[in-house]
Image (cartoon, rainbow, N blue to C red; front, side, top):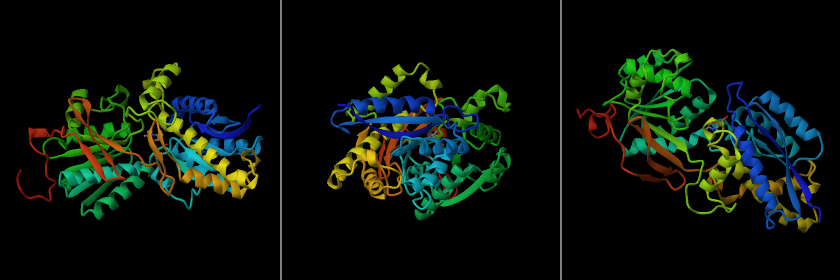
Length: 423
Ligand SMILES: CC1(C)CO[C@@H](CC(=O)O)CN1
């Protein structure tokens, strides 16, 4: 018998001419793979077929708003929306509650999105950047560092992240200095030297990270007395200076200043040898996607986040499945949804809220604010290579540490300047 179509909408940033994240390049194929897998499963959404209608948002909120109206005003009725990068997710997730729509974002890291007043129907399979902060604080405590300095560029995502880190540090009795810069970090670095900064958390993009690293080299703000914490999703060779940036530091000097810095990042791919709800392990998913892409994963934006996009479709499918069971009692059907059906929207929301399944990106579950709960991993640069140091589960407050860390001068970790002993 003919299956009934359930329509969903989506926007994917396929290029980053606005400087945003072009993660749709790998995330759209991942979503299409998930739709294929879900629609093949007889035990999920029996009698229904999920159909996606999508546009390229270019990570531009204005373009995404235009396409959101197309998706909403052009038949057929859509039941949910998939959204990509933070600027687009902010616009879409603030508007669509008027249509009783749930938004599932696979690519938004902005901490500002953790706000049920502004975004009442948003769920994210992509963790907030703030998920790094409990991990950072746990490491400061492990090495008994009582004073840290946050150096950030002035983008909103880094300001929100820095504010949250400062609050979490103060709650644990760790003193915090904050410096910010726009474009040129030289003055901020000089101020940090005057303030005797030792343990430094850098919150900025890759190109800004190279400017800071070169300044740190020139001012000797690295080595025995210092430890840097940087963002973990930069490319592995981010510190090598591209010619066109005219940094007056050589690759050798940058590598020297980068030696032994730590990074933290959210784990986005399950490495466990346990099959997920899709029947694949995380690594099997990654290999299958790599074979499907006709581009090199290293040149395909969004490849690291693709597991989040794949799992976002499964979260939708399971929420529809869960809602279906609740509707038959009232002889209502999913295909009766029409933007005004508050009852059905509430069923969908409650089903989505209680989502919990083993996905290719790890256990998929949401906080009350719709945030993805995930583990983070810590690495350290040693000899120009990132070495895995351990993982942190902020839910369980559990640090799995491999004791592989190294410090300049071959001795234990440097104290911050609140410790008077001359180590
Ligand atoms: C880890 C990163 C690169 C953070 O930015 C996300 C994009 C965004 O928040 O707009 C994609 N994933």
